[in-house]
Length: 305
Image (cartoon, rainbow, N blue to C red):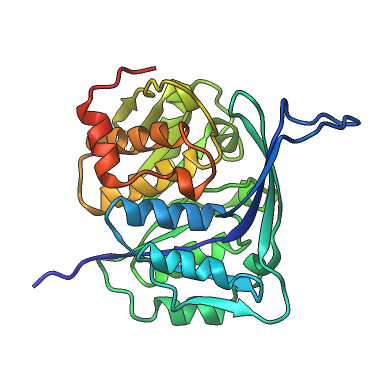
């Protein structure tokens, strides 16, 4: 009898402090915020929740400080496994300061905190019981992406990578073992010099073992396996409130769809619809829709942007 695959997400988990502002603060400028809110966030946690709400079984592998117990409880309430989400006694939970302007655009800076304390021993324990049908997902907020990718390859696990934020260490990284690479147009420049989107995604598709995906905001998404190129248009929404977790929503839903063996066309349509819904809501994790909401959005026939 086939087992249900698990997504092992080795990723960050942060306390997000979100400030609503009339505009993103410029150097030397002081602005007053109309509202401050606290959310659970971090690219890793966002993507874990997105994949879980999309219907996949998820284990989150990471670290929080002693101030992060409520974050663990929140993931557990989403049905996400946390047996490998450790509490670090010496380092506080990572946190992010997020500015959101009137148009919904954001600017973010991070303190990594406990996210940078994940070590090889923790990774080995977490993946010790992984099966060949399982997937590994990671980002670049934990500072050990190359190690995670190599470990997944050694264990014969399909690995997806969202290389954000971009650091100099990523520029020489080998991508050949990746089943999925998800980058936006800014992140893609760390790996290829092309400016034309189709050339970018086609070259990236030739450098991975599976699928390269280029997200382009309102212009939609392109994907390639190095031979074929797929396109998915962005979706129109009545209002953009907050773009904070749109990319993470897309990534989580995309990986969940591919784990469910959806076609590339269907996976891109599902993920772009989920991301479109996310920008109509405030916050990071609170903005992520369920699988049912994304399916209803598609069924309602929202037009491409």
